[in-house]
Length: 255
Ligand code: PEP
Image 1 (tube, rainbow, N blue to C red):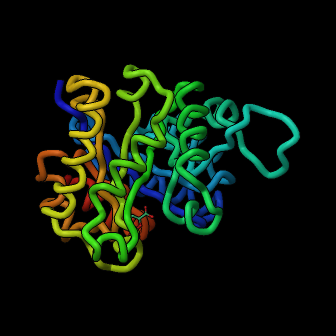
Image 2 (tube, rainbow, N blue to C red):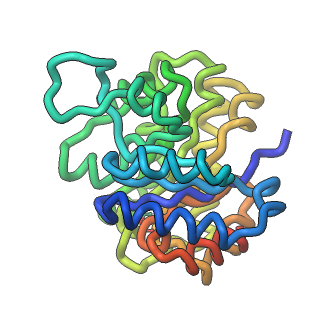
């Protein structure tokens, strides 16, 4: 079965709940309904916006999906400041970003911790958007493919093949995030292809064919077309450009 393209907007630490409602409405109304049969579009707002996004999406029967940018490894308990997977599932989240490079960098998240977040997300019926990507120095030493495949398999450790099929992988080279430097479509294909091959070797070709692999890093309407034209790239995780309704709908329409 063909993999459905996914365009997911990571809002990071931007927009309050009122601004979130306005952006969701503009995005949803900026895309014709028939478009959603071809491409899935999701927004990933801060935790504080999710309830408002849910109300907007449900109330107006919008075809947008939504999710969170992180999740606790715990279902509940004395973990001050954490937001759990059951809470996000109750809010109707479809996706949870795990292992974003900003969390790996600023919160010292390891592959082991990210793996626990993958499992917490799947346990509650949501799909993790699992980010892997190399820093500039690793690419300069030509270690990017090895780095990304090793990181991916480490984060998936302990999962059964049918669970792996539900994971969305995002290849996000750290040097391309928020910098305006995009990997070439060939760079994106090289790593996304290697990630799929690693999944096939470990979990079988059927599972590898099911998994959606996104590219992320300074994606915009000017480059999305060439990126998603690559064989193993099934969409994009979009940061900065997802905060501008017109640009986000334009790039989504071009995917
Ligand atoms: C991201 O934060 O996941 C991202 C890809 O950001 P940007 O598109 O701004 O590079």
